[in-house]
Amino acid sequence: MHDPTGPWASAAEIAGAVAAGTVSAVAVAEATLARIGRENAGLNAFSDVTADRALAEAAAVDAARRRGAAPGPLAGVPFAVKNLFDVAGLPTRAGSRINRDRPPATRDATLVRRMNAAGAVLVGTLNMGEFAYDFTGENAHDGPCRNPHDPTRMSGGSSSGCGVATAAGLAPVSLGSDTNGSLRVPAALCGVFSLKPTYGRLGRGGTFPFVDSLDHLGPLARTAGDLALAYDALQGPDPDDHACAARRAVPVLPRLAAGTRGLRVGILGGWFEVNAGREATQAVASASAALDGDCRIVPLRLDPAEAGRAAAYLITSSEGAAFHIERLRSRAAEFDPDTRDRFLAGALLPAAWVIRAHRVRRWWLAQALAAFRTVDVLLAPATPTPAPPIGAKTLVLDGRTVPLRPSLGLLAQPFSCIGLPVVTAPVFTPGRLPLGVQIVAPPWYEERCLRVAAALEAAAAARAHPPAMTDAAA
Amino acid sequence: VDLDAYIDTASAMVNLPIAGAYRPGVARSLALAAEMAAVVDRVALDDGELALAAVYTPPGIGEAGDA
Image (cartoon, rainbow over all chains, first blue to last red; front, side, top):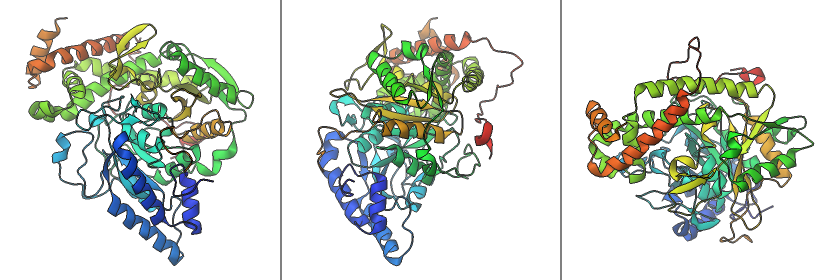
């Protein structure tokens, strides 16, 4: 049991302590705000710290408890959101300079309201790659988010501030987005858990889009249990998101400890192994070894993923550019140079490429669903390598030097392309930077991903660890 | 493909002026997109598959398929 006001308390520990009255939500919020004040300058995770709001929300949670009202499953849990979520009173900047001209949001995003309704306390908004077109965590306007495990290294993006804040003990839960890997890459490089649910599961109302047909939202946390706790609070239909499925909420927390006995686990080789470095392959092997025995391990190739990744690339480029075309026409000089050229190019793609990409997306989905007739979940590396140095421009994959920005998320892209649920689980090796393993399930089977993540955590094969730079004794 | 010529023509077609300083980066991105298009092009698609709309809904299957 951690001190609920300390950096490494889980959301479940904090909510339990607040509900029991052994600590006040205000004390948790004050300690969290003080920690952010001390540590954010070196990490660059936060865009805005909503201190007054946090203290008011925490006081309301404490007052509710004193009245005898149920304080909620996330009572007093500090959380922060990627700055593409609407937060009333702040312009929704989406990592850009241009959006800072927008009027402040008048209403919170759907998922912010859901977190508040569960008793969670918003402590701020988090930096991100411009308009979410990023895998690195770098941003020309705000500077790079720094990896808490080595501040000279990339955090991963585009939910960069989420990975950093949650890994560094500044927010036990954060909310980000994932279009091509933007939850999974920072979770992997910063060594925390993330859940990218099925496309359409969580409502995107009140968030700034990137690629509507690929955009997902989801939580990051330091334990599988916290991920499930947050996910359960976030589920439900959203009339403000046309793509949000009208599905009943399916709470996963009660089933988290059900175990994995008998599950068939496909270990992706082939294209996934060719494009992963040695350490990433070893991370999957160690997760596989931890599940072996309880589960049936099935080596598997799913090489159509390469075409799925290519389809996602083309759809992203074209659809993202079309969304921004007026800004590209009138304010191109104000874009981050690392996103501008790709957006401009995306506006020029032949329609035949993009339409074919949509057909290939459907074809790739059929290949993946066929694989799920023989296995229940898939394991694959989340990134090809651990966190590269900030400023790196290239990556070596399978002996080829490739541009880093579009390539750091290539192992994640195939699954978001077809909307499959994925939990990223952190794998640490002593003395090394963390890596992530993707646990992938068929559409709407988030529970299966989370149960496997919980089993890996219980076996100590996947766990978040405090960065050495922070005070792990707290 | 002469990417410079393509940028000239296509950018004029969509009324998107591209400053000279941005053109090398745009050309690199177009070249990478062409590589991706070649990968997509190699997939043998069935003309009987109707999946042309840019609207995507994951299917429900099995017990998790209930709305």
